[in-house]
Image (cartoon, rainbow over all chains, first blue to last red; front, top):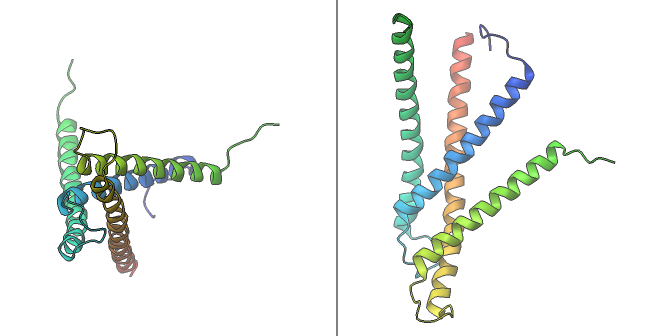
Length: 92
Length: 89
């Protein structure tokens, strides 16, 4: 990545590990959420119903979509906050 | 002699941990959704059937979610690559 400050290898590795951990946490949460939203707790069959399958496809797409939206908004807000804090005189 | 954990060990432990966690979650889900009769200590035939279906369905759901997730990831990667190429030009 050009123009970025040089980060040493250890820090890179830590960031990467954190990213993987976060991704897997997100994945697990998504699985739980979509199970709850799409699978009726009546287990008369061991196959996914057609409706359930379609629901899962949409659920995954929507979850990732919302994940991205929330991330963008969060970044935007925290950047605003940071800029605001910079403009503010230090307390005390 | 001291045995130092290698990266492979760490990965294996991590994936084993993940397996156990999902096992715990799965049995909790299927117990909550399928077991209602507490007049007997026996797991009823109906309850057993429900729990087994619950587990199989969960595995199939997991497969499907992982498939879809991978598809999304591939598309996201392609988009990122295309954007990077555009920036280079």
